[in-house]
Image (cartoon, rainbow, N blue to C red; front, side, top):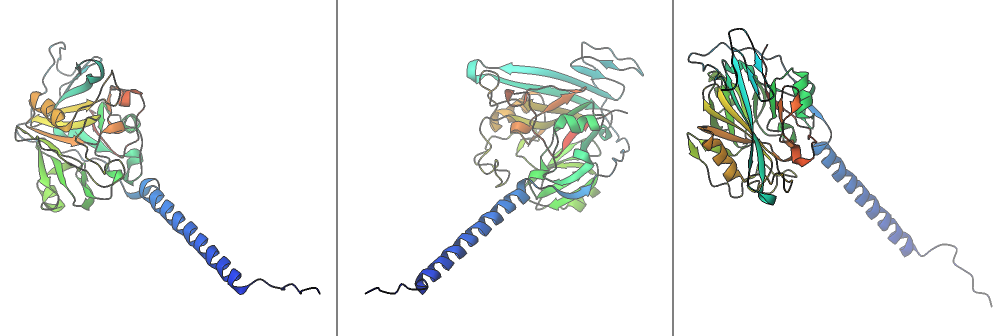
Length: 331
């Protein structure tokens, strides 16, 4: 006798298949949402503002007179320019390469001693003059587009959505988060707690540039030493402490209108191992700085002078795109 075969599957099998399909679809949608969120956070450009033209500041009383390097002679109305120096009536730049240590402990860094007659010569710029997240270009590209004589990478604000960002006297972002640095119209640099000092107060006090990264390296001539666990944010790449040996960029002030910019190469055994924050702070104090502040480092660390990159980022000669630069320009 032939047993009739069922004409349809067991209803329980159909239910299990539907549930499995729903779970798979839910997993795909969840993964897609995660990938989109990551792309939106770290890859997709978000324009927040278009930069306004820099407005020159009125000369402040007591402005410093550029110091002329020993190997250069400047006469009124002329410019002296070499591979390491630039001197004019309103500006003096001297760049020195420093190598310390041996073997894998070798550290190579570059020091730019810059004196300006007025702080209006110290400016900030963004790629394509656009302020926002995930909008980047190499330091040298942004510098060349703005006819910069000298430039370094800035605080990479485009990697974060917070911080207080005043550039060339214009407020672009007001999301207090950490201790920032401010450069004022009188040529001085100081630090402030973003959560306690308002952007309106900073502007009223003459802040032309603010930088939001850190930490503070030297404050009122005192070298800071405790950087244990310091983190800029919780983003990828910054989630762990940045106190160890790394490529670094920083800005220091010796006196009003007299600045020191230092870029340290690193992660390149035999050429440069990088510096810890503590040693980086000591470099600025040894150079005579009363104030110094740490900026974005790693692959971002770049120094540019007279049309060329001075340092060797990560020992590979390749820059990493950044969201901003600080630069010197003379009309």
